[in-house]
Length: 124
Image 1 (cartoon, rainbow, N blue to C red):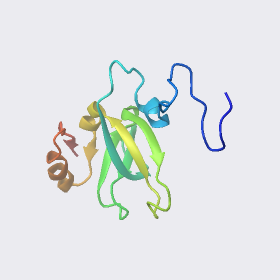
Image 2 (image 1 turned 90 degrees about the vertical axis):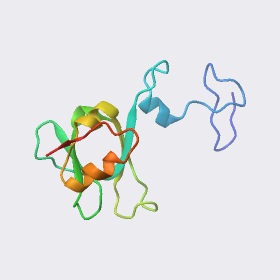
Image 3 (image 1 turned 120 degrees about the vertical axis):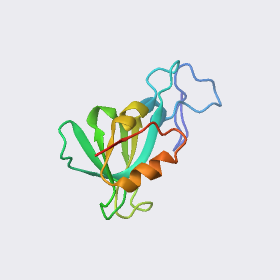
């Protein structure tokens, strides 16, 4: 199938006129019958002091952070410089992995407790 400049050919199983599966969805949803329970955060990756974890700083001053189990990270996408001049990344975690995360500042406990899906990140 020939495509116009800037367009994409329709993949197998996709009806003409419908958009193909989004690249992000292919990274996040491995089984369409069971979409994952995910949490999306934005932050700046740094070294963790805990084995098997990654540290995500939630602000550019590095005052607030989470220690996230490395296996809880489903996908990371770097932010565009025009949207985030200091860099940073969007980070999708499993909800269970978020619940196992530890926060480096007591203020975070209060902040995350306000989220409707909060299931209790543990305090350091």
